[in-house]
Image (cartoon, rainbow, N blue to C red; front, side):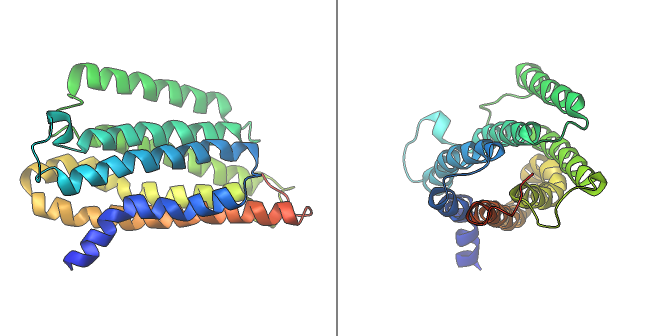
Amino acid sequence: MQVIHNILAFSEVWALLIPLYFMLRWRNQPGYMKPVKFYIWLALLINIQIILIYFFRKKWDAPFWFESNNHLYNLHSLVRFLSFALFFLMLRQAFLRPLKIAAVVLFIIFTIVNFAYYENYFDFWSFSGRLLSIEAGVLLLFCLQYYFFILRDDTHSTDRPPSFWVVTGLSIYVVVNFPIFLFYKAMLKQFEDFAIDIWDVHNISYVIFCIFLARAFYESGRSRRNPQNTTT
């Protein structure tokens, strides 16, 4: 079981290599995929640091900012939210666009206020379940809006565009992890072993998320080879 746990712990890095392969193989992607590309590169850099700290923080006399990787999850949350919010804004879907822009602005304001007055970013217990759960909730609303647009668009092709696979993977990830993010900080303080074990659920959902991103890049490459396929 420990071997499986370690494989899943490393998944925060190796899972990103799956979409990265397809992204590099098919570079000519729709414009709205640029934020997804940005996310993959930045998430890879952040997650490498997370894994290094997780496995080596107890093996050397590290500086205080290397004693915990919790703050990096907060940073990853910000990167993920901003990247996929921009992804949704770049789609050809004017429906509720002003509300999505307002949601992004409010999220940024919330983040600044939260870490300025309520949570210490570099504190050991600084994993911000509040930040990650709100991020997951807002992104889920964006995903539901996307599906609503697809359903009401009578002219939409029966082929699934690359954006569909991105949104589907993101939907699975945020639905699975919303309750984990919401209660994780409390679990860390009171039931640390359980919190560590349940993070495997997060890692499994992250692998699924990355597989769907890879599918999006693959479908985009396939549609470019077959021009009759359309994208949203």
